[in-house]
Amino acid sequence: MSTVKNTKRDKNFKALTNIFLITISLHIPVPRVAPEVSVLDTKTATSLTISWTAIPEEYVTGELLGYHITYKPMKISDQRIDETDSLTVTAPATGKHELTLDSLSPFTQYSITVAGYTAEGDGQTSEAVLGGKHK
Image (cartoon, rainbow, N blue to C red; front, side, top):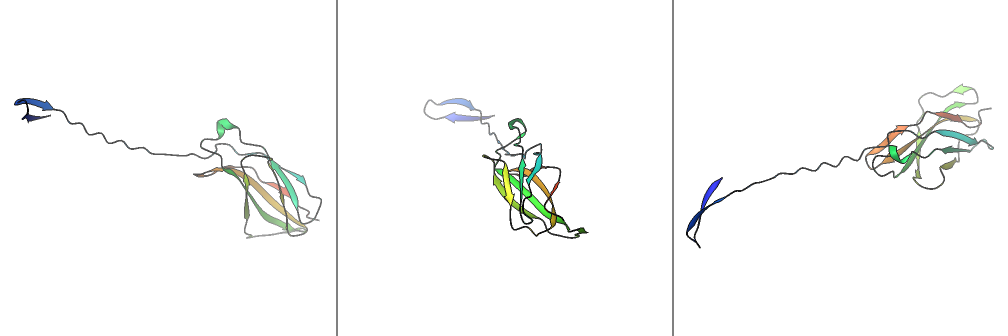
């Protein structure tokens, strides 16, 4: 507290000066649960269709922007593949939760996972499912 002289009234008055520092931290969390994934169709040797469940609203903390579908080859015919890169595609948050993966290697089995994502990043990843023509 400090004393300041008021020259207009020639009286002393006390001025109380408070300074507040407010820090706002925005933390946009990621979805807390993973969708469930299933393989719907493997009619051709070079494509497969998957579907997944929507993440319930109460587990979507932040704005759900979409889903990342990650897939990677695991076996060609009956030969296991080591050290392969995975590919990720993006699907919208709304609409049909289904996607056909095209241009796959023939007679190859793929491991597929799905995760919902927000601006903060990917949420929980689903358990991997296997799909594709492997024989």
